Each structure stands twice: as C-alpha cells, then as structure tokens.
Length: 389
Ligand code: FAS
Ligand code: PHB
Image 1 (cartoon, rainbow, N blue to C red):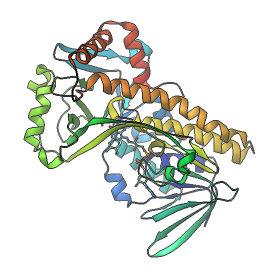
Image 2: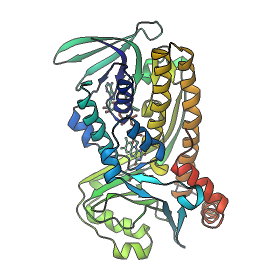
Image 3: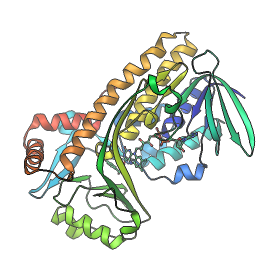
C-alpha cells in the first residue's frame, strides 16, 4: 500500500489531520492500535477553543457541533470565601464551546468514512522506518499478517504512550516534564449540570471541577492522591466529597445520580523537542501533555494539526520543502504558551502535599487578583479561550 502521508494513531489528532489533508487532495492512511469502539469509548476532553471549532468546520465536521455545542462566555472559580466569574466575552470578546471529545471523534470518523479514508484498526506492532531518508515506510501486523505502507511523510499522532516519539533517537530528543503529586478522579453522570457554566474549585480538601456535556449529562472531577484506586470510590463517597469542595449554594441544589464512567487520570506537564525528525512529525499528545486544568490538551492537538497540515500542503502541493521546517517552531510557541497556562491553573487550584502556609497565602493572593483585577482576568480569559494560532 502507498499513501503520501501515513498517520499513526486514530484519535483526534490523527483523524483531524487525515480529514484536512484528504480534503486538500493529499492521500493518507490511518493506523490505529485499538478498535474503533475502544477509541469512541474513551471519555476525555470537554471544552473547545474557537480555533479548534473553526478547524472542525474547515474539515467539514462542524455541522453537529454547531447544533449541539454549548457556547460558554465565562467560567466560575470558587474558594472557601465564595465564587466569582471570569467573563471571557467582556474581557477578550471570546467564548469556548462545550462539546465532548467523544463527539468530536465520532464526527471525524463519520467524515472520514464518507471520504472513504483507509483507517486500519487493530494495527499491531507498528514500526517506522527510513525516517532520515526520502522514502520512509511503516510496518505493522494485522490478522497474523505483516504489512508495509510506503509513504512520503509520517505523522506521529499516537499519543503519549505511542511509538512515534520513541522513534526519534533518545540522544536527539529533549524532554521537559513535571509530574504532579495527585490525580483527577473523573465521573460522568446522567444528571443535570450543577451550574450553567464550569466551576473550578480551590478547597482545603483539594481541587474540584464541575463541568458538563449537555443539559442531561454532567462531568465532574475531584483531586485525589495518586495512591487512590477507582474502586476506592463509591458513587456515594464521590458525591459527598464533591459537595464538600463546591460552594454550599451549588452543593445544596445539585442533582446526583449513578456514574456511567469513573476513572482516575494522572497529571503531568510534558513537552518533547524537536517535533520533527526527518520525515516524521509529532502531533498532539505524542509530543506534549498538559494537566487538564486549563482544558488545553485537545485544543493543542488542533493547533498542531493546523500548523502541520499547512506545512505538508506547502511541501507536497507547492514543492515548498522549507514549509516543513516551520512546523516545529510555530507549534512549539503555542505549545509552551498552553503549557504555562495549564501549569499556572494547576498551581493555584490544587492542594499540594506538604503545601506550606506561605504557599497557601500565595494561592489565595493569586485567586484574589483574579477576582479583583481586570488585567488578571484579561490574561486568564485570553489563555483559557485560546492563544492566537
Ligand atoms: P490520543 O491519545 O487521544 O490518541 C492517540 C491514538 O493513538 C489512540 O487512539 C491510541 O490508541 C493510538 N495509538 C497509540 N499507540 C499506537 C501505536 N503504537 N500504533 C497505532 N496507534 C497507536 N484534554 C482536555 O483538554 N480536557 C480533559 O479533560 C482531558 N482529559 C483527559 C483524560 C485522560 C485519561 C487522558 C489520557 C487525556 C485527557 N485529555 C484532556 C487530553 C486528551 O483529550 C488529549 O489531549 C487528546 O486525546 C489528544 O489527542 P491525540 O493527540 O489524538 O492523542
Ligand atoms: C471536561 O469537561 O472534561 C473538562 C472541562 C474543563 C477542564 C477539564 C476537563 O479544564
């Protein structure tokens, strides 16, 4: 088999890149390790920046998003002293859209199917070859058979645990990382959201987040120790702890119900440089991970795809090989901006083990500035709704 671009990974990065390239007349093939049902069963991000929404519309996948996506013009932050709102629309004239990553992936799969894109699921032992030459190729196994795909370029869209980043020689990679000493216990429940907009709660017992997917489906998170296991948390225990961390007026009136998904995600900040190694380009979680506090993970994947799809179109359709050199520097500038913001949101909202009284006072001062200073709110709103592409 041959394709101009072989894409490793059928998550949002891989599917969106494939969709945009195919619409530009560039042939792709997507290799995904899991089944389609497995990919579609993952519950992850929930908030899209305008840039990501525009990318999906440009990719011909925005119709249901336009119908079902919920515009949020602000969000709430709470401390034991009360709750305040940051008005994105008033501060920076922007909003975000609440629309689950599961829906995004469904829409992308539907669009890819409509275009007849080759997406190979359950592709095992994917390996990349000839990256430093001009004729790279990919090998994989399926149904007990070995296969080969010849291509011109390879996009590593295979997430943090994929093989693409590992295909860059270790002595040529620089990895920047901060692992946080806690995780997020997330619950999806068929209940009405606790509030109209998201609530990020800083509480002495730990961070909490009240989010949603639609008016009948809520998504909640509480900070938990890394030693916790999902089975340690009954639904009752989760709701009780969540209510203790949210503002009383919200907790008193919120609807609780059964969890239809419950999982614990570790938190880390991570960037691997460079994003390019010969004919291989890293995209999305294959290149970087952010703590979900700033709702940036999926949105960074979208901007990576924007930059790489432009670079590949330049190289393939306009014979501008120099365009490919621009991918890394352009993407990394926005990646590090989102890395900083996600680290900052995580630092001011969570309880860190061994946090000193001084640390506590600094957090309270950061949140007080965010509540009372227009300039602080402008900076937060600009970052939360998305730095420019
Ligand atoms: P993904 O990890 O989504 O997709 C990579 C794909 O590659 C997967 O389908 C995988 O099966 C496949 N793959 C891996 N290795 C392979 C191999 N060797 N061969 C072939 N295929 C391979 N972001 C937010 O903004 N908000 C959130 O609340 C949020 N919550 C998250 C919770 C969890 C548990 C995780 C893990 C991430 C969360 N994220 C969140 C971040 C997440 O949304 C990512 O940013 C987003 O999935 C990035 O998409 P991809 O880059 O496509 O990577
Ligand atoms: C979610 O709805 O899953 C969500 C929203 C905002 C975040 C993280 C997760 O910062």
